[in-house]
Length: 335
Ligand SMILES: NC(=O)c1ccc[n+]([C@@H]2O[C@H](COP(=O)([O-])OP(=O)(O)OC[C@H]3O[C@@H](n4cnc5c(N)ncnc54)[C@H](O)[C@@H]3O)[C@@H](O)[C@H]2O)c1
View 1 (cartoon, rainbow, N blue to C red):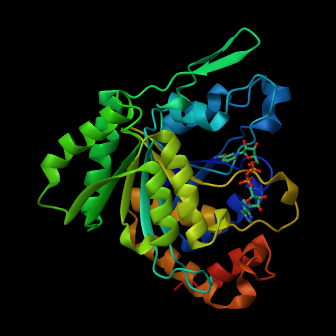
View 2: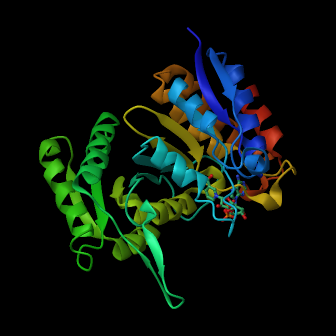
View 3: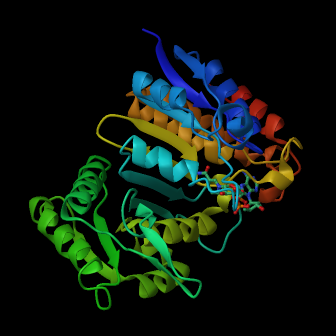
């Protein structure tokens, strides 16, 4: 039976990377129908908001969505559309895998780290104000409920994936009431999973950054509050080829929204230059979420096959292929 997925092409290079991804999924012939809706900078004049209500309604109706990056206009009083989407749909888990890929020459081989980032709290809750002209204050909010659900989802998904090492990252030595709570709740949840993992441990976030830069093969799954997860997952993306190859998923109990980690890269917009790989790998996660496991594997295999030929690689990976050409290469490698 056909399933409908909401597609938000996005701003900047978004329509190009989502367009190439859509062509690959259509070629998989998996029965996905698209409901395309627009959000972001391009709709502000017409709709008066970068996040029109009908976009949220479409996602609520279809339950699953994939999006290109959305530009957050600086200094126009709009809250980040991405942050708003996650809050409106209660997409509390941001899952970001970073896996070494064929044909990308980097200092470390066989990196395979998944970051589970809490997606609705911490300094991203938007609780901030000016104090006169001379100061600003942002409140860091961490709740037991918010922490428990991200930790449980991280343990459950990691267990299902056969992962064996899970690490909580925090700065509880300084922020005892917030990061301290995150750490404590993680270990409370961990009690239910002691037999499923070989190592359940913790790292202070600054040490974690150094460890990842020096010994990434020692790590498997990271569980982090929002801000540290944002930063460390970009670090992991750097270990595997940069933002052009970093996929992401925003998961809640009712809805899921898949998107590349990168932004709208306006300087490359319309130039057939952006790497669509991050969006394609996000689509692979989407197919897995939709329990289309065989199709997910077919798509991932074709992506890896395409990457093996240097002629297919985009400029950020040292090649000369364009967004469209990479998409066509993936399609021609589909089995
Ligand atoms: N989830 C999202 O929608 C999202 C995420 C981050 C930033 N943004 C928004 O995107 C806009 C631009 O942000 P930015 O410049 O800080 O970050 P960016 O990710 O767009 O670009 C940073 C750099 O990474 C490289 N890069 C990123 N994606 C690439 C790709 N697909 N192929 C090749 N190279 C790629 C480019 O060198 C680029 O200059 C801002 O408005 C920001 O708010 C949106």
